[in-house]
Image (cartoon, rainbow, N blue to C red; front, top):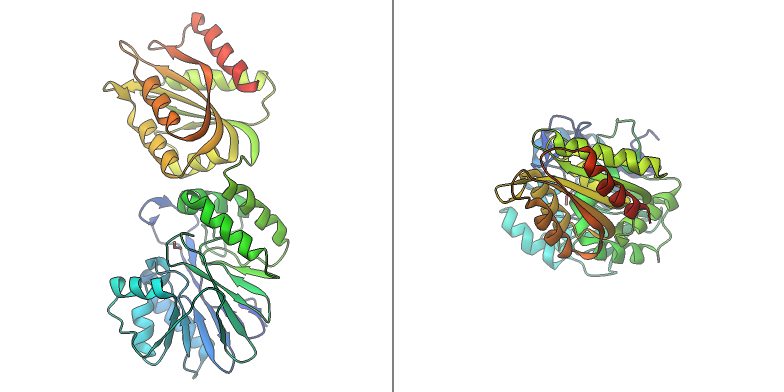
Amino acid sequence: MNDKYIAEDIVYAGVDDKEIDLFESQYIVPNGVSYNSYIILDEKTAILDTVDGRKTEEWLERVQEVLGDRIPDYLVISHMEPDHSGSLEALVKRYPDICLVGNAKTFAMLSQFTSVHVEGHCVTVAEGEVLSLGSHTLQFFMAPMVHWPEVMVTYEQKERILFSADAFGKFGALDTEEDWACEARRYYFNIVGKYGGPAAALLKKAGTLDIQVICPLHGPILKENLEYYIGKYQTWTSYEPEDEGVLIAYASIHGNTAKAARRLAELLEEKGVKKVVVSDLAREDMAEVIEDAFRYDRMILAAASYDAGVFPCMESFLNHLKAKAYQNRKVGILENGSWAPSAGKVMRAALEGMKNITIVEPMVTIKSALKPEDGQKLEELAESMVQ
Ligand code: FEO
């Protein structure tokens, strides 16, 4: 068996994409991304998911290489998002007799995205139903909103493999050597994070299965130490902090708010906070800062006032946090303003609209630039953050 074999008769058939500029037209992927696809060779053959339309030709070659002269019997559709269904029409064109396996929501969506005619060529499955391929039996579990409503996962009973759709996915092509958690966390909170409840429900279902291998639709196949990955997902889906630490996210126009943010970081470190991350919202990857907001138990927002509101990159950050259901954290606020400071009011109102956020007092206001007389207020805010 070569490294493309996950088990005897179960083969990885996905492709890497290192040329994409932005995944989902918004996330930078410095090490690319993989679109995972799998093939099970049995009395019947099944392909589990296609790949993004950017890689159709390469993927079809790979499918042909694995299948040889065999004609695939089934295509299991876990998820209709185009990074997985983008080669579906091409596959059906090449293998017109293939039978599509999905749930009722899959087929409703399939007709929106494609002009494939499924009549007489589809099997509609429901929660817990099975499909026998011979010695391999596939069992389907619905995973709505992880990360679209039609998502389902497939449990292969013989080898005890969970094909987990977007869950347990990660940015980065498969030949990238990097820590799993960092890019899996950035992927989870930005892409699936809004749906922590549904993701937790999926984990609960998965907990009833004996799982030896997890095959996600992006990133590496997880074969060992599964409790580590599942443990991370249990934390992430619960919206509880993963680590103790303070993220200071700042939005600075001319550098003065940035200086105040860095001074706060020094004060926190002097007070014994072991992990302080300072992020420039105007320049750093927003998705990475979102990831850190969820990772740590505390956060300080520091922003300049702008147009009687808050500097736009902070507004954008707050919108992202709200959309991703940021909650259960302790947050401090620092505003800067030269004539009528307004940033604090906007930040406070946004935080008050989120669930279970404790706003740490005092909110600090600086006028234009940090001065020696601001020291006491910063000290008080830092002290409140460590209480
Ligand atoms: Fe990887 Fe939600 O698609």
